[in-house]
Image 1 (spheres, rainbow, N blue to C red):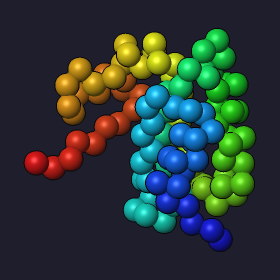
Image 2: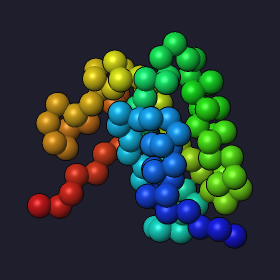
Image 3: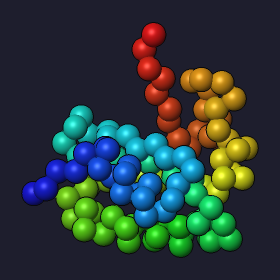
Image 4: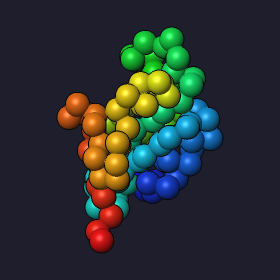
Length: 104
């Protein structure tokens, strides 16, 4: 079984979707089996939520054979502007996404 890193998944989505913001978290302690993603791109403009998820799943089609869980929040830049952190460590996503701040 192939293991995919957080960086690999993030870079692939960034390239294919031309994201303006992307955050991919490996929630599986590094084994690459469970990811959470926030994906922001103009390519989602006018696209229904289900189609957005299908777009992402199609890009990661091969990788999904090894990934057991993939949670995604797909937003347009306008939607992201309304939800992005007002300050570092304060992510207003209506409880739909998690944000970890680096330890100080």
